[in-house]
Image (cartoon, rainbow, N blue to C red; front, side, top):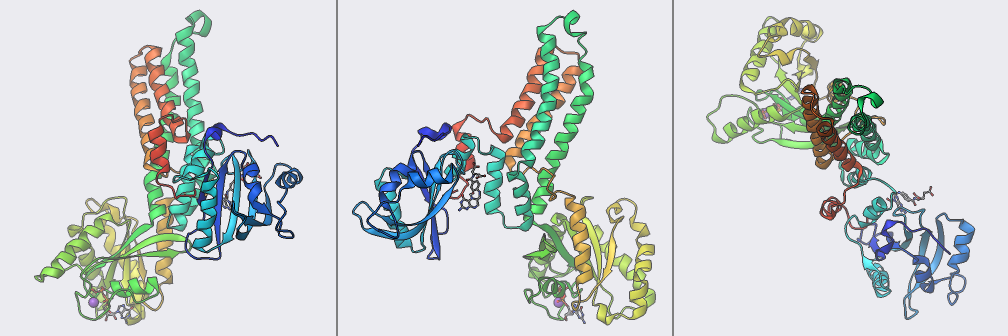
Amino acid sequence: MKRKYGLSSNFDSIFALASTSQRSAIHLHRVSGRNLFEIISKYVYKPSNQNENLNIDLLLQKSNGKAISHYVYLKDQNLNLIDDVMITFFPAPKSYTGEDIIEIGVHGNPLISAKLQSLLRSIGMRDAEPGEFTQRAVLNGKMDLAQAEGINQLIHTETLGGIQLARNTVEGVLSKETELIRDQLISMLSYLEAHIDFAPDEVGDYNPSSLLPQMEEAKSKLEALLNTYSTGLKVREGVKVALLGKPNAGKSSLYNALLRYERAIVTNIPGTTRDVLEDRLVIQNKDFVLIDTAGIRNTTDTVEKIGVERSLKTASIADIICFIINLENIEYEKISDVIKFEIKAFLSEAKLSKDQKILIVISKKDLLNEKIIKNIENIFKSCISEFRTEPFGFCLDSNIVVTSTENTDLLSKHLVILHEELTGMLTKNENPALISMRQKNKVEIAIKCIDDAVNLIKQRDFPEKISSIINHARQSLQEIVGEIHLDNVLEKIFSTFCIGK
Ligand SMILES: Nc1nc2c(c(=O)[nH]1)N(C=O)[C@@H](CNc1ccc(C(=O)N[C@@H](CCC(=O)O)C(=O)O)cc1)CN2
Ligand SMILES: Nc1nc2c(ncn2[C@@H]2O[C@H](COP(=O)(O)OP(=O)(O)OP(=O)(O)O)[C@@H](O)[C@H]2O)c(=O)[nH]1
Ligand SMILES: [K+]
């Protein structure tokens, strides 16, 4: 049967275990190459009559170019049984790689898998390199390079947010966005090329300034795209929430309550927590990294001092700061002063930036009287007015929440809202995001080129020069999705893949 093979058709047939190699229910092996079915048919037998080969050609005719699975007996060259297996044939070009693919599911014993692999080696196939299946998929036009990076991330990411971003990339959302911007650049290029090739009486006066609005538009799209890299990191790695405050504020207790297990040591001794603790936390499918810190105070204890330094360092890298204030045993009249004093002391010690969110958390709700709980919001509003100016301006939209270890629902709700404020709509399906440093670098180059082109336009420079630099921007965007001819670049990208992917 004639099948259409892609660009990678000159390559060897490759195989790899696509599943774990541990003892398990099933090991799934994958083979990709050309004329695979003809080669393998000798070793595949009918379950009903183990002396009769399965007629794969007939099977494929019935399946009409689509993948088809069958239960068969697999034997080696000496006609010794390897295993009874499920085998799936994906005829080229309708497969993951665009070549013929065979998937073989054997019983998940490493010894059985070794037998199968030695058969495959002995019939001229070789072990696949990391990412080689996906590399062939790219070469055969089944997906572009950005999508391949999405697949790699889909497998390696450790967060739900990371999966969502990777999925969007696999679906081609990023590829589409770069194509839109590329199209814009191409339309500018065609204007410039027309003025290079033709006289003004044919194509009108040369007025490069007319390109400026389009340049600005392309640039702002690229800058928005560039921003998705750092926001995407927050989505992928989890938004960092640091619990900060004075000793005995109740930080470790809240840490445990949010994580729902006794992770950190809690005692009534101030200065219990000495080091920074970190754990993953998922609330409503949103990923956080929760960080417990040592209580901040002046201390002569050497170990605690280091702990305090680390707390302040954590404060500067956190996305969300939960500043925890303990009002137990504080008279109603003094509350405003205590809140002001503690926030001021914290802000004067910690180095914060405007991008960080601050949430004021009043702890130990169960120990506070009703009057305090009822009025705390108003007290807070009146006393933070003095933080609304520089250098405290970032406190502007701070919220306050009263909580106890008994019930952290309200605190969780605030964290989810702040997560959304920090990550925006990035995880929604329509939104593209840069998911690798490589992609980010390409966008940065494109932005730099556009800046240079704008300067040349303002100087009314020759269309040749402007065109060449815009073309460079276009090329850089093109490289996000592919058209990279340098083997070492491709090798570098695919070397981080799993074997068998
Ligand atoms: N058993 C198995 N499970 C798997 C994979 C696989 O390769 N095998 N995948 C591997 O990553 C993922 C699914 N992705 C896949 C993507 C494309 C094709 C494929 O055969 N595409 C053909 C036919 C499409 C069709 O019939 O509509 C094509 O694109 O032409 C298969 C799996 C996850 N699960
Ligand atoms: N009743 C009550 N007690 C609490 C609550 N949260 C914390 N505590 C108590 O307050 C004391 C200090 O709590 P921790 O969680 O260790 O405080 P911390 O801020 O981590 O303290 P350091 O490690 O010293 O910085 C402990 O005795 C806790 O049991 C709460 O919501 N209600
Ligand atoms: K403590």
